[in-house]
Amino acid sequence: MASISQLNQFPCKTLSTPPCNSKFTSRPSVFSIKTTTSICRPTLSTGTRPVFSIRAVDAEDEWGPDYEDSAVAVAEEESEEKLKPTEVTEIDSLKKQLVDSFYGTDRGLKATSETRAEIVELITQLESKNPTAAPTEALTLLNGKWILAYTSFSGLFPLLSRGTLPLVKVEEISQTIDSENFTVQNSVQFSGPLATTSISTNAKFEVRSPKRVQIKFDEGIIGTPQLTDSIVLPENVEFLGQKIDLTPFKGIITSVQDTASSVAKTISSQPPLKIPISNNNAQSWLLTTYLDEDLRISRADAGSIFVLIKEGSPLLTSLTN
Image 1: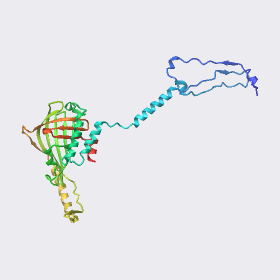
Image 2 (image 1 turned 90 degrees about the horizontal axis):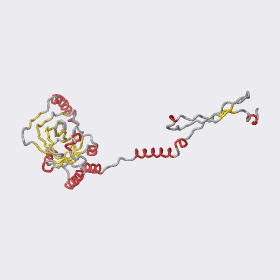
Image 3 (image 1 turned 120 degrees about the horizontal axis):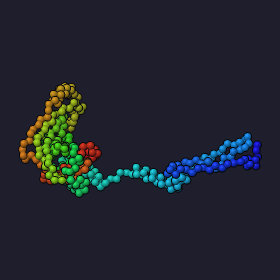
Image 4 (image 1 turned 45 degrees about the horizontal axis):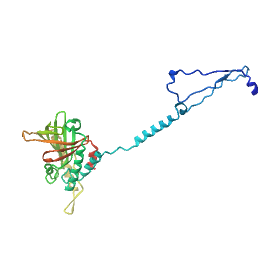
C-alpha cells in the first residue's frame, strides 16, 4: 500500500468552477452542490477516482438569516386569521335582540306593553343605523319573499286570534315583492284539522321617494283548499276532568280519511278563486325605514310597524326556536 508521502507525489491539476451565467441567477436555489476544487490524476496503475463533495446548503446561507423568520411570521399570521372568530357588529347584536324579543308574542298579538316598548326602542336604534339609505333604489334587496315576524297593526289581530277562527291556525303571513314587475303579494296561510288554504291580495306599487312606495290592490285570491292526507287521532282526550277513550272512533276516522282523500283529488284540480278589487280607495303607502339582506322594517298608515324577515335567513331559525 502506498505511503502518504508517495500519494503526495501524484501530479494534480486544479480545476476551477466556471462562473454561472447571470441570466440564470435571478433566484438562488435552496440546495446547491459544490465540488472539491481539484481532481488528482495518478500516474500509477492504482489510480484514484475523482472525489466529489456534496453539501446541502440551508436557506439561510442562500437567502439570508431573515428569510426563514419572515416566512414563519407570515404563516403564523395566516393561521391566527383563520382561527379569529367572526366579529359581531352592533347591528347584528341589535337584530338578534329584536328577534329574541318577539318570542311568545304571536307576531305582536300577545305582546305586553313592556315588550312593545322594548321592541320600539330596538327598532328605533336599528333605523338610526340603516345600512340602506334609499331602500326603493336597492331593488335586489327588496326583491323576494318576506315573512312577518312582528306587527303593531291592530287590523291583523282579529285574524291572528283563535277566538275569531276556532280550530284554525295562521301558519304564515308573508309579503312577496317582484321588483322587476313592480308587484306585491300579501298572503296568509291557514291550517285546520282537515285542510290548509291561503288568502292573498295582489297589488301594484309605485316608487314615490327613496323610502316610500304607493300600493294599489288589484285582486284578492282564495287558494284551493288542500285536504290533509291523514288525520291523527289520540287514544284519549281529557274533558272536564274526565278521560274519554277515543279508540272506538278510529274505524270511523279511517272511513272519513278515505273519503277525504278522494275529495282532495277533486278539489286540488280546481283553480284558485280570484276576486277583482275595483275600489279606488283600496290602496295604501309603505315606508321602509330599515333594510338589509335579512331584515326589513316598514311603517304604514297610522304609524303601524311591520318587521319582516327574508325567507331563508338564519334569523327565522332564531324566531322559531
